[in-house]
Length: 62
Image (cartoon, rainbow, N blue to C red):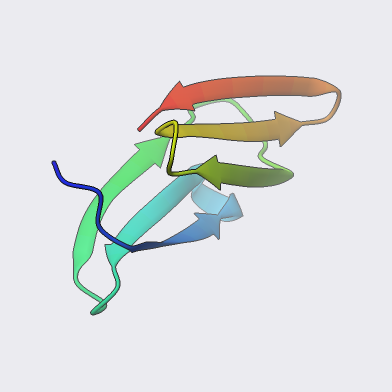
């Protein structure tokens, strides 16, 4: 996959982050079963996302 511009949206109720193309088309989702997501950060240069849940931090490859 090329390095396009994406919009990421946190869906706390379903413990997931949804990724859309910059034109609004659905691209992908990242589901975190059993984790209550507080916030997230995406670094497209290194193709990583970090989420926080309480005192825990999780790293995910995009």
